[in-house]
Length: 112
Image 1 (cartoon, helix red, strand yellow):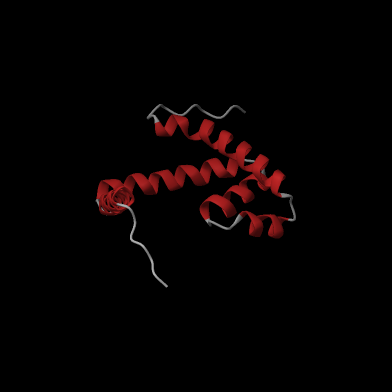
Image 2: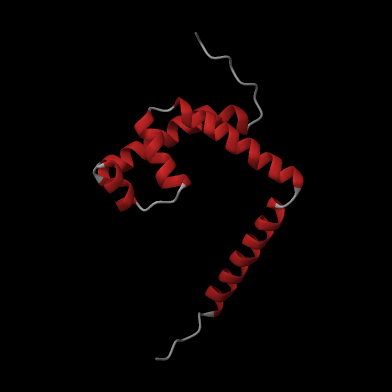
């Protein structure tokens, strides 16, 4: 079976992507970057704890553990359309909760 090489533009794009990935991986080894990633993970964990449990579980399985949509639906006994709705809601809520941390704004105290 003959496999044609990628067109020059695709090969160049692939090379640039591979170089970018290498740069990101190298940057992640810097102590300051590892601290930022650790801080992000801590804040994400706190934000996930504020989501409704089912939405947090869907987000955790799909985005963090990288389970396929089919696997998430089977494990949680939900439809695919429900999965997408729950992911959308989870992402929106997480975006709202993490915005302050992301942009370096002081966090607001929780209302009691």
